[in-house]
Image 1 (cartoon, helix red, strand yellow):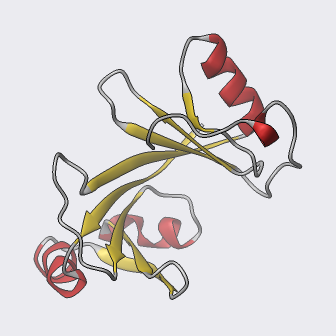
Image 2 (cartoon, helix red, strand yellow):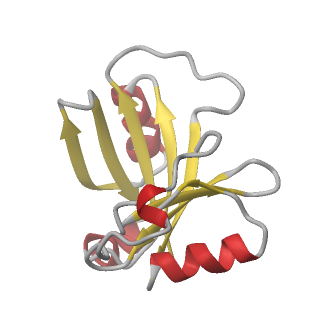
Amino acid sequence: MRYLHTMVRVTDLDASLGFYCDKLGLKEVSRNENPMGRFTLVFLCAPADEEAARKGQAPMVELTWNWDPEVYEGGRNFGHLAYAVDDIYAACQRLRDGGVVINRPPRDGRMAFIRSPDNVSVELLQAGPALAPAEPWASMPNVGVW
C-alpha cells in the first residue's frame, strides 16, 4: 500500500491556491478540468517532493473545486485519504472479512471507498491499470456515503 493524497474541497480556487501555494509554499503538480462533472482537481506537493510527485511517487494535497456553489458543513470540505493498493479486490476482501463496510465497491476494478470508525472516508485505488470487473464486486451496490 502507498499513501497517495488527501482531498480538500474548496469554495474559491484562486483564494485557496493563494493560500496553499503563495503563502504556504506548496507547488502545483497537475490540474484536471472536468466540464462534464463541473469540477476542477488541482494536485499540490511540498517543494522537496515536486520531482517525485510529478512521477506519482510522493503524497499530495488534492484541491477539489466544484463549479456549482455549495456550502460545506460538518467537515464535508475534507474529502478523503487515498491509498494505492496492488490488488483492489484482495484489499477489499480482506477489509470486508475484517468487518469493514465497502461503501463504494470496486465495480470498475479501479476504485473503492470505505470509512474509518470515526467516519473518515478512505479511497482505495488500483495501482497500475484497472483490473477486469469481477464478482461479487461488479454487481454490489453502494452503501451509505463515501
